[in-house]
Structures are given as structure tokens and as C-alpha cells.
Image (tube, rainbow, N blue to C red; front, side):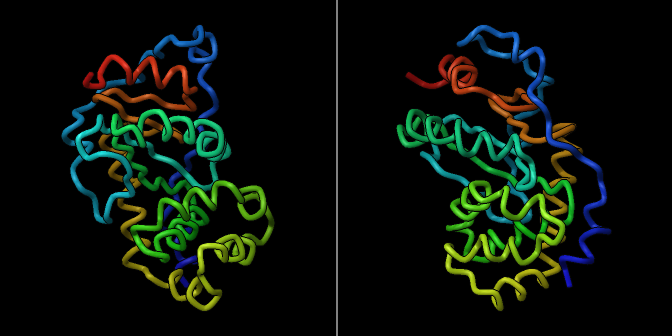
Amino acid sequence: MVFVSLRRLAGAAFFCATALAANVALAAGAAPEPDRTVDMATVLKPGPLPELTMGDPSGVPMVEYGSLTCPHCATFSREIFPELKKDYIDAGKVRFIFREFSRNSLDVAAFLLARCVGDDKAFAAVELLFSQQDKWAFVDKPLEPLIAAMRPAGLTHDQAMACLKDQSKADAMVAIGKRATDEIKMTGTPTFVIDGKVYGGELSIDQLKAILDPIIKK
């Protein structure tokens, strides 16, 4: 089964990024210093799976690399993303792209199930799994609680088990993570790439506004 074999595929040890000390010290509204810069055009090149994206295609592209077992990513999804979506994505200012970064085999399995409901519904499934993270991500036997967490998305147990056997898609998940490691030198999750600048760790809505407002077309 893919769920078992992925322990060999996703062996790189990555940990959730804690809030960066420099970011914590910033006054509200101050833009944090990026960890590094990258070529945004290279980052935006298509990967092995359809992008999980929302917002106007002409909006400023913002990429998040997230892990479904990362508590900081879940906090961002629950507490920061709704305001970002309302003020920037729904307003046509930002094109948001979520990319799966698998820190372990459980991440790969969870992302496979999110994709199983359809690429057009996968982002909503990712948000669902973040909202239920404490019920499946930190238990001794996570497989059944993970499958149970996907039931509101309409995924049956049999469908879930079939999805977990999709080795080609599992390989694609691992490839997305490897590409992120190679291209932007990922060290933890969440990591954001905006206007060619890489920001590791959680970002507050005030920090995001300070980053985005100067580069958004008026």
C-alpha cells in the first residue's frame, strides 16, 4: 500500500517552522525581511500536478508551501488565510497558489486523499484537513482518523483506500517537495514566496499587507 511504502519515499526530515524571532520582534505593519530571493518565473513553472490555486490569474502570485501535519500551517489556514482571502484573493489582487510539501509519509497520504476528490476541490479538502488536524495528525494510528476526516468531502472508505494505492501520484507529491527544496532551499513549513522573496514561518495578516500592498497594481 502506498501509505506504507511512502515512508521510504518521503524520508527527508523537515519540521514545522516556528515563528521566526525576527518576525515576532517586528512592529505591527512592518514587512519582515525575506530569508532569500529567488527567480519568481522559475518558481511559477508548472509542476507534476495541476496547481491548487484561487484568485484572479492577473493578481500578484503568492505561493505557500505547506504540510498537512504542520501545526503552524494549520494555524495560518484557520486564522490568517480567511482574511487574506477576503481582502486580497476575492478582491482580485492576489493569485494564491498552495503547493503540497510532504514532510513525512502521513503528509503524502493526506495530500493524496485531498487530491482524490478532484483537483478542483482539493484546496477545499486541504482546508478541511487543516481544520481537523488535531483529530488525525497526532494520534498513534492515524490512517482511519484521516479517512474519517475526509468523509465530509464525500470520500468513502473504499475510495480512500484506492487513492492511497496511487503510486504515480504519490511520486508526484514527493517530486513537488524535492523541487521546493532544490529551488527555494526549503527549511520548514509554512514557507511563502512573494515577488521573488522567500519568507519562512508564519506571517501575520499585517505582515502580509506590508509585503503585498507595495507590489499590488493600483
